[in-house]
Image (cartoon, rainbow, N blue to C red):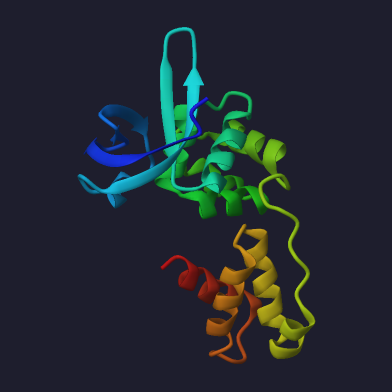
Length: 193
């Protein structure tokens, strides 16, 4: 199994890249071709998919993205191309958020996903995509109002790391008196930059 490949971008297309690793060009299906340039140094986490008629490499920016992909293809009827199209169209956070909140409508908007597939994804994966949220520290509870603490909890449930949540909380705290939903929007906007 090839866990990752490090090298330079030799070529890329709409949904693939070729990574030159010591003179060997690895063609990898990749959801973020809009973020690469020729000759760019890159390290790609990879998943090798073997079938009777094909061997394909799928690449990811992070281990979390790779793990999400592997969870998606474990769902009955969901293949690697569909899972990769979901990541390309929606991204990690949107998929995890839709699954964890049971938002079948959002999943149905993703390429190749119908009502049956969307329901199956939620049924199979809800509660399995994010680690148990860390309890907020006493310092955070004392500093931030309940609405911000609830928004922080929401960000943790979407898979953001504690240091990212803390940075977002500082930004949220600059706008006093908002609702939890408004703080969550501020946090998501900040973290998506």
